[in-house]
Amino acid sequence: MKGRKGEIIAATLELAAENGLGTISMQQIADKVGITKASLYNHFASRDEIVDAMYAWLRNASREKADIGKMDYDRLTGDLSLKDILTSSVQSYLRMVSDPRMFLFYRIIMSERSINREAAEIMAKETKTMIDATKTLFYALQIKGIADFGNVDAAAFSFAMAVHAIIDYRFDLEQAGLASGNDLLRDYIDEFCRLYGVGKGNEKNR
Image (cartoon, rainbow, N blue to C red; front, side):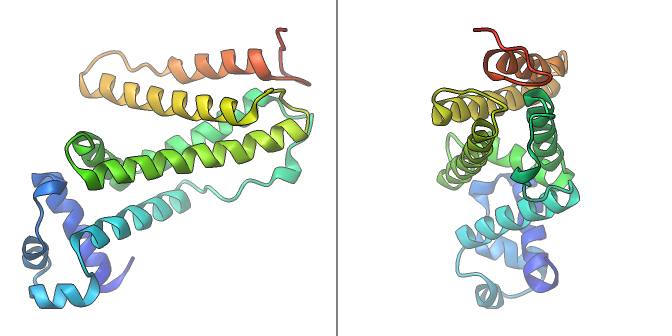
């Protein structure tokens, strides 16, 4: 985002990284940008609106940088394995959340979600977005005969939540200076595909 709104979002992110999201005031943001508080209100009606705009902008910018476009479900065929499709989808999501600005934002949100309503709402919104996208993909995989989920909604929910949890756990390990846990996602996808995959490249265990 360019212009004054972009400056405001950048300043808010910097302040949040320094002091925490819950402590930021409109006056602090205005001072950081170098404008009056009244001028700040000409661009955003509240701090909540700034944070929402920051989340939307960072997510869109990170998706573009990670080259994540809309899934072309017509290209899903039996020649593609469930493992390849899921691995590609998860790697795309990891590229998005690993963008430095998006990663910084998530670090702030994750650290404050238990004490800050705004942070909790953003995490809930991000999780729902991930679940909904997974459901759409899984219905396509079921229709194309690449997977046999039985209950598609339940399978999509469990996969999205498991991937979300593994990413969080990997982040905790890295922050603690412990083992990276890089194999966790690979091993989980392997087991998931063993249970639900059908067709070429999938080993189905009934």
